Image (cartoon, rainbow, N blue to C red; front, side, top):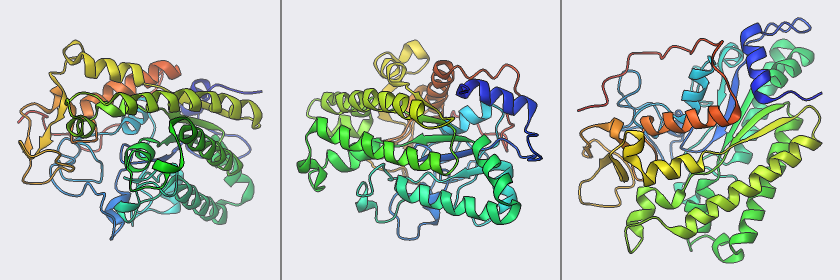
Length: 365
């Protein structure tokens, strides 16, 4: 008998786990790119994709950089907080222990990473999804050594899984002529290649214990500030957005198929494309006043690519959709998270949101 992601989340979170003697907390294992990275890339000494300088993290905790490519929380952070789940630490956090894993889960997300191994190679170091799954497999073996085979299987099967990658496979691979994928495939065949690779990866995760999994879809990638500034008109790039829609459609169908065939699997697709597109097209409607340029920039020098101490900040970060050339602000992430919660049917009514670790500074000024 299969249970929905929402029903299982509520049952496990509210009632706790007491099956067969496994007194384990419900935790998350997160796989992703810079939209979900919470510090892994900071520990990659040769990696070029980092969020380790001000003003990253200005609205999170003590206001210092923490590895998130944002001014505040990521979408995964916000969903977990609203569901009353602990925030998983970065896999490469040197303080990570087996006990921490069992209490909080692990975040393997890596800025610049993609579904494909070849994606983002010019960042030098980053974890592709296959590498993240390999690291997860090692994590499982550590827990197995601590609590034994039976309890380990229960722990990982009751855990929740988030997979959120794909944008780099287009922006930092297929749409760049320096990558062979750009001339090996056409738009349709590349989307097929991508989704079939993801199918194999999700099947592998299932074999390692994943039963309740949510995969995030892509937003309108052609409307991020970087894509706009590289266009001749300054507007959204239509082809890039169409690729995102094609990927979402193919991935949604693939997840339905995988979930129906794998034992006890509830693999769900989280699609926020429409609400993000509406946010970008009608920012004032959602309480924003800028949806085409980054809050953190180098003034008239574009593209800025990253946010650094010499960058200029917008006057009110809560009114900007984008934090830098690539990534949304925390305010935009909250809107996206709320949409995913609504579409997934995740109800926080009976849950106590996890407390933020510190009081955050004001997003103004």
